[in-house]
Amino acid sequence: MNPDLNRLQPYPFEKLTALKAQVTAPEDLQHIPLSIGEPRHPAPQFVLDCLTSNIHRISNYPTTQGLPELREAIANWCQRRFKLNENTLTAADHVLPVNGTREAIFAFTQALIERKPGALIASPNPFYQIYEGAAYLAGAEPYFMPCRAENGFIPDFDAVPEDVWHNTQLLFLCSPGNPTGAVIGMDVLKKLIALSDQYDFVIASDECYSEIYFDEQNPPAGLLQACAELGRDDYKNCVVFHSLSKRSNLPGLRSGFIAGEAELMQKFLLYRTYHGCSMPVQHQLASIEAWNDEEHTIANRVVYAEKFARVGEILSPVLNFQQPEASFYLWPETPIQEEAFAQQLFAQQNVTVLPGSYLSRTIDGENPGRNRVRMALVATLDECVEAAQRIRTFVESL
Image 1: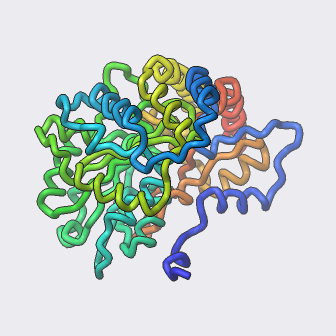
Image 2: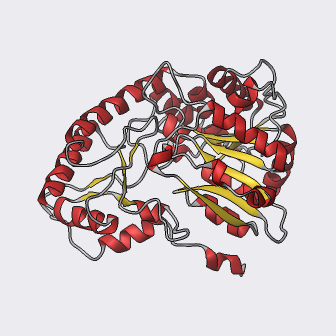
């Protein structure tokens, strides 16, 4: 077996399961999970109708490149959402549908990395664990950049040593951030593009939470948008990942896309042809309907905004946290050690949250997730309010 498999850490939810197994939750309280970022709002009915009405397409082999109509819908959505210059992001050359961004982020890393001594992949810390696993199995080492409160939970890119940039082949961004909800601004994105030119690395921007935000007049900026403002219409060294899981409450559809520089897409298409990850035709047709509609995403944001307002009102007197710019996570500080907080909360109130240290790595004695937990406000409004009230009761008992 590949020896690098031994370098993979248990997934955060495996650690959480082991932590919870040491205690027993009260049976008289219904369990409310705030640990997994799985949207539980209803899926758009028109997408489900399209999926079921095309179920007979299960008899057709899908192509790796996907339906031209889907790639066109994605390209048009990108142009509208990120104000791209017309006809610069084309369905034929710059877009590939993928089976959810988790699969695509991992696979793209395997296709991109040149295996040589010292190869680095730069990643925020805390981070989506796929970034780390993809690095190890591609023969590279992760270089973790801490996301601290004093820097708005954005990595301090100026603090990265020059020799690290020299050896970096891939820079992962996550904006809006998981678990912090922080958004990387346009000026920083442009600075990173300049660094990618200077040191010749690829920027992979994970933007899966980009459509969950709270100011309708100020949606989060995207990497392709920064390219457009720079007149960088070839999107050189830049790729983005987007998904219908969070945007459209369709995590089980396993539908997303990667878009960016045409040469990178061409090489990645070759990889995917052998990898065998084409999206089922009926899923592609349903995805077209989702990307072509914005009304359901606006309605989705209204629900999240109400949840954050209600939960924030309950928890702000007892926990210290910043209202996120986007995403559906809260990232509060804990009054006791984060694992003890999560375990005791479950044991006393049957509410599950994720210890922040499970999403982070300790570098030079610092773990940016220490004494924090991630709360995913994905349940119904009533459940989120109930969970917040239980959390407050728990904190007040400490």
